[in-house]
Amino acid sequence: GFLWWKTWRPKSFPPGPLAFPLVGNLLQMDFSGPLQGMKKLSEVYGPVYSMYLGSQPTVIVRGFKALKEILVVKGTEFADRPQNRLTRTVSHLKGLVVAPYGKTWKEHRRFTLSTLRNFGLGRKSMEEKIAEESAYLIQDFKKNKDTLFDPHCVINNAVSNIICSIVFGRRYDYDDSTFQDILHLVNENMKMTMGIWGQLYNAFGFIHYLPLPHQKILKNIDTVYGFLQRIVEEHKKTRTPGEPRDYIDCYLEELDKSALQGEEDNNNKKTFDNQNLSTCVADLFIAGTETTSATMEWSLLYMMAFPEVQEKCRKEIDKIRGDRTRLDYEDRVSMPYTQAVLQEVLRMASIVPLGIPHTNLKEEQLNGYTIPKGTIIITDLSSLNYDETYWKYPHEFNPENFLTEDGELRRVEPFLPFSAGPRVCLGENLARMETFLFFTGLLTHFEFHWPDPASPPDLTPVYALSQTPKHFKMCLVPRINDK
Ligand code: HEM
Image 1 (cartoon, helix red, strand yellow):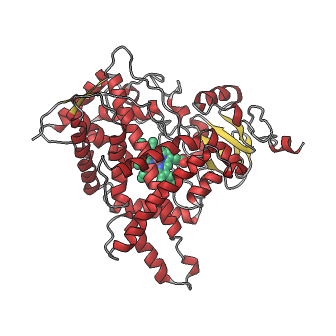
Image 2: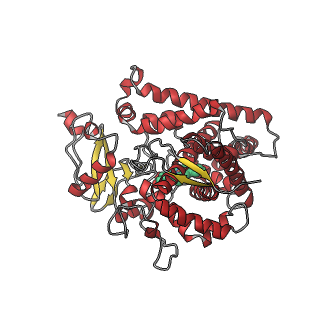
Image 3: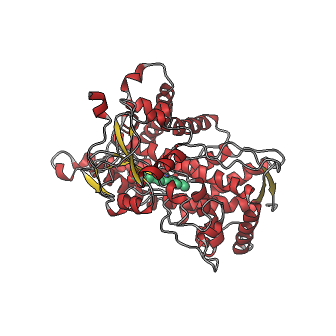
């Protein structure tokens, strides 16, 4: 009786498939690609339905009306994050990405946004950093002009270098094997935490000490966080107070201020501390690397799958660039086609298909259902991307989806690749600047060809927190000879 009760839906809770005791719906889920299954369930139960992850009641939200309600209309009410064993192990209730809604998260989000701005986001210097990295990337690509080339590692490294330069004030050469190993572990964990072993570990703490695959997840976390912690410690030794070099130094300035403030002013006491610093550094490093480098890989793959789009894009790039060596970010406003292509890549690939889970601070109403406090809310952002009511070409890659009849860029309201509301992606501007500059830089210097006409590119994503393409190899043909 007791076990059944744990997975019985409360009165007026959203409907959903029958859940088994203890495991709930976990064993019914297809962890290699749950998106299709989630779509099928919504055809039976509606845009707001429920499942049990273990004994955790979980509500899946699909479609623009319900997503807007959760993210924007009741954005604050649903702005908390559910916690589980993995989030607590990784973040200790601190940092940015999975921090609970409240003073600590707010202060850190505000601090991070303003520090990103001070280090030049929206100004020239950030753009110059990206342009500089883009030049390294182009140089490396050139070395591979006569071979079949898998661009995954260098793209990942180049993209990561941008966030590294903001956060730690340095970049890593593409042949730095220590850094490549770290990137690889982050990559692996993005897939494993969303998989069955991550979920089982969350549901059943007793497996902690058993020699099962979740041990690999925990070991990877240790290695990556250890790497980052060493960088923080090094900063403490080498900094000059008053002259911050990067995000970590700016944070250490805040710690100095808090120390001076002393004990008496408890009400105004800031939430900055060493644990928050470590979690923020890791959050930025991970969130800033995976998503954006996946977007870059997808953009190249789609350009090879649709050579006529690649050519049209390059024409626009060449026209606007004129005799300059590269484009500025500002140029995008006169480049509707290129912007539409990058939007279309975000749509078709659904980079972060399910967003990051939200939860509600107290009982709420949604679509006529009662959502008890602390329910896990999964925002199926990918559900918007192929909805026949919003798109002219819902199931095909076609930049026209983002263009008006006159070829102007079209704003599509029900398209939320970065989510919306108080928890909206903190790196959206940075990500858009990076993808625009890297992408236009690469198309300026190379033509990309799919090597095997007999079997076209496989565009099925590898399901993860952020979806990547399957590994692929490509041919590149240099276009212009640089000095
Ligand atoms: C959160 C998408 C790049 C930092 C998110 C969320 C999505 C997302 C869907 C969840 C929002 C929610 O909970 O409702 C993307 C995509 C990217 C990208 C598609 C690239 C194409 C970046 C970059 C950074 C970043 C470059 C680094 C600065 C963050 C952070 C959060 C977040 C810190 C957590 C925000 C919070 O909880 O307050 N992102 N992101 N993202 N993203 Fe991004």
